Each structure stands twice: as C-alpha cells, then as structure tokens.
Length: 473
Image (tube, rainbow, N blue to C red; front, side, top):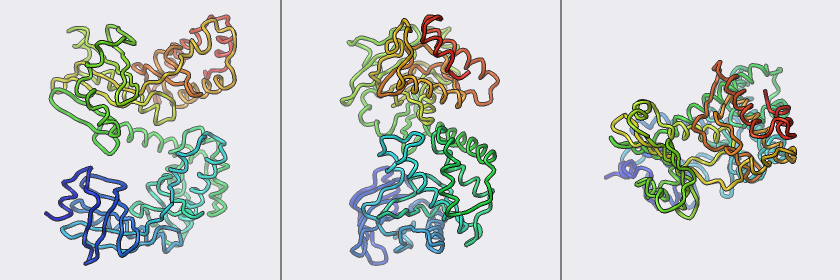
C-alpha cells in the first residue's frame, strides 16, 4: 500500500514519526500539527538537514488546493509580504502532492498571543496591539491587490518582531501591485472584525488608523462596513452551530438507529463511560434536581466535576408532543454553544445524547462543565437592600447588554439561573432560550426577561429600582 493510501486510511491518527521519499530525499515528519482526515495533513519535520513545515495533500483531486497554496505563497513573496519561504513542492509517491516551507522556530500565531492575554476586553492595550499588528499586515496585502479570504489571527505568525502571513491557499489575487477596490476592502475587513466580540465595534475607527497608515484610502462608509460585519458575524455563527452537530475536527458524532450523540472531541475519551451509559450517574448520589420533565445530577468524571441533565418523557401524551422535534437537550446544546461563540459566559457544553427510534426522539441527556459559582439571589441578597458593587454591577449590565445586542431571550430569568463566578455572570438552564434575529416577538420576549429578573427582589428595594433604571429596555 502506498504512503498516501495509508495516510488516507489512518483517518485522524496518522503515524508519527513518518518517513516519505521525495525525489530521492527523505522527509521525516516528527509531529502532526493539523489533520483533516483523508484530505490534508500539516506536520513539522526534517528535510535536507533543516526543519520544515510539510503540507501533504492526500485527497483525490487535491491538485487544485496544492496549486492554490503554492500560487498564494508566491503572490505574497512577489508583493514583499513576509511569509515562510517555499522550499520544495511536487508529487507524492503513490498519489497526492506535497509542499514544504521553512519552519519558523519559536514563532507564535497572533491567536496564540491573544489566548495568552489575561484581558482581551475593549481597550486592553495588549489586545489592541495584537489587532493593530494584524491590521497593518492586512493593509500591506490590500495595498498590493491581495486578500486573505480565511482572515483570522491564527493565519498571522509573530517571529523575531516580524509578522508573517500563512495559508497561501486562502490568498486571493485581484490586480497584482494595485490596491484593492474599496468594496473588496470592506468585505475583507468585515471578515476580520466579525471575529471579535461586538464590544470591539466601538473601537473600529481607532483600530483602522493603523490600517490607513499603510494603505491610505478615501473615507470608508462605516454604515456599510457595520452592516457587512453584522452579516458576516451571523454567517459565522450559523456555520459554527451547524458544525456542532456534525463529525469534524472539533466534534465527534455517532448515529445509530437507537441513538444520536455528539461530544467535544477533546473530551471523547474521558467521557466514554458516561456516553455509553448516561443513566449510571443518577443512582447512589444526591440529585441537584428531581423534577418530572428533567432530572439533574453532578458527577466526577476523569477527575473533574460535570453536570448531567436528563430530559425525561413523562408518558405517552408527553412523548407524542416531543418525538417529532429536536429534544430540549439538542436545543440547550445549541444554546450553550451560541452563547460561547458570542462570548457570553455559560458552562461549556461537553456532550449531548438523544435516545431514538429511527428519527423519533425519546429521552435525552446534556453534559456540561460544572460551575461552582454562587447564584445571584445569594450573591446579591434576597432583600435587595443594597446596589451591587462595581465589579458585579459592570458584569451584570454587560451580560444583559450582550444578550440584547444578540437579540437573545433566556425565557426563565430567575436569579438562581445566573451564577457569579470568577468575576463573571454565568447563564445556566438554557432550555427556553431563544435567538430572535429580526423576529417581531423579540421586544415582548426581552421585556418579559427583564421584568422577571427585576422581580427577583422586592419592588421597592434599592436593588430592584437600580436594575429597573439601568437594564437595557
């Protein structure tokens, strides 16, 4: 069997180390950095006594991607944009293609730099500096007629005080050597800004100054740019939510006639016993909730605490109402990931299981991280005789503002469904959460949430009056 065929068959676990003969010269892959099963592999290796980054294109019909990668790197080099040098490129023995570039030892992507920050909120000097570095590199590409169509911080490397652009496959060339048209600039910038939390929209004018220093433009239509950012954010959110329900690098999905399950791939091994028998944790330990429609418990799995919520079927009548539509576990799984995507704190969803008969749903389970926080009724006091301290006040108002901007209603805004943990307000119990978009029902749903939250405290209390005055209407 050829090396390419073996790599295709290996799926998500290609062998390493791996030696491949490239025109008589051995390439030794020591570590795989990214695996797209049966399509493309990216690894760190050694070739001709130097460290290289190797991309192996192993899918049938991969020639187009290989050619685009090579053409994109060459376009960046012609434009004077720093990018790792292209060292070799050609056919893999047994089918497929390879491409080798220099390995920038000690480099970090701007995404890695961002993830290491203690504060990525609006106005953070370190976060602002990272965004400005990215925008300067984007401006340099735009000035030369290039656009990175997979524009995110992970595609910029910081190495020895220099920013390098990577992923040649996503480089689009329009008119080499001439600046991009303003419409193309707007589209590409919207792609970049849409990946930031909406709070950063207030800083766009300031951030753009670093772009305009490199690529001076007539004034951008900010209204059009804002509309493009909103549209791109919605597209990214829709794409991500669909990804949470299919087998991919981040999620593992199993479908049979009798069940459907999805689990965060990084948690698949640790949660395997629980996925096999989710009811096993509901016996012998105290339950957090034992209601008719749902039962909730907490368990320690793989050395950490998780919460398991079982959505029960109370009888035939209840089943007839539920079997034909996605379960409440399915709904809560998507709701949790929606909040996570939008930067709104909620315990991370880890897995979801539906028991089925073909396409007909029965009981379902949702597994999430356990949040040890104190609920807001306890944190703020039931009497409501004092307004919250600044840290709590800012966090509460920010959470409500985020929900309002995203047009999300919780549906059951009891103070016990909001936890105070690590300086943030954490939302739980997402069964009734709805994302309204342009739905005319949104104002009524939001008003109901707002009233329900304020009603947690006596109407004449300082806290209730403070909330009624400050929460978004």
